[in-house]
Image 1: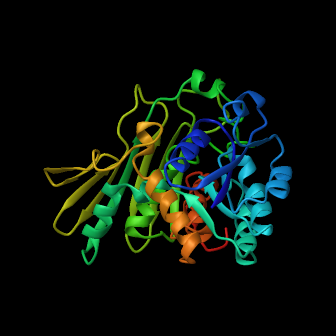
Image 2 (image 1 turned 90 degrees about the horizontal axis):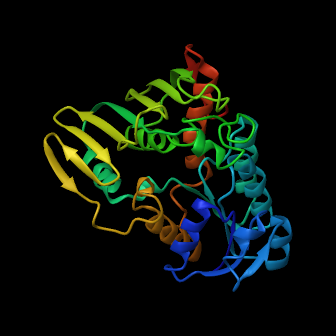
Length: 323
């Protein structure tokens, strides 16, 4: 499969590293920063992604750019019948969800969204464990530290227009995706968002709390204002057990099941070990015609939760198929 990557930053490098081990052929890299492109002298290099798509005509493209660029890039690739694997979030605007799903519907290509923690061995283990069990509720917790140095690395970070929000749309969106994936999508939620420690640094939230109601209720506590990075966790309570899911393993009541050494982690430790498995499965789906499990509709679920949380401001908000 001939593959191109748009965005050669931190996450783009992770995708390129995984591709080098999956047997797919990297034929082009695109980035507006020429210095980043210099690391890839053996492939075609572009600063304009549309020119790259039209000249190279890759079979698939990975979108690893800042959030605000995702929607148009996804749509333009799908309109050219090029398979797309997009980093989270799929988009950051309410009106773009339906535009993307319509482009996916009318395309001969597949769309995949990179929620790699669904492919972590610990997540797969918990998903299977919960089959047939009565789930009482769930809670997600993310407590990380982000400061001015982090946000100064890229001007788009910490802005409503370009990042789309703060801790919810960037860091905690993975935890939200796991919550709904494991216990089901809620019908409504109430959320509170605040800027606790970064008022003079970012214009969006660094702390948020969500309470979601559905067949199984769940909640989320997320902050970038912690003193340090702590392991993100999803806790699921069944009628008989309490499961604590982390990217490196699972607690079932007081027993710990270690998963961190069963596969390779790519990039930052918090990325987990799911990137390689997700990318391999995506290309197996493309090659065999099997439908990829995290398609546009699945990838949009966490976006819908985030956008509903931003609309809530302490009031109950209904979550529907159309935002």
